[in-house]
Image (cartoon, rainbow, N blue to C red):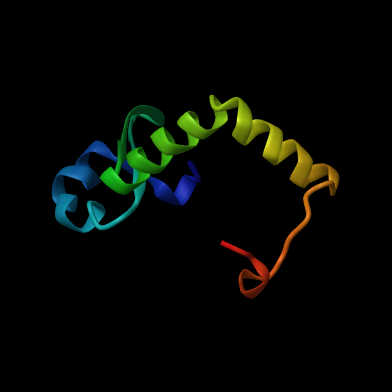
Length: 80
């Protein structure tokens, strides 16, 4: 989390409705982070990422993509 996405406990209490519009933010007390807020969308994205990273076939496809071995085709050329 970046410094501008960290608020103090007092700021969080005073501006909670505004803060909840953010995707995530940290709450600090005396300069130390004591809590983190993550939106539902952010949590769901993290869970989806963990599920993908735990899937061997996805990891092989990712490895192939990164190494340039994956071939891409236009959707019009896909035969169903």
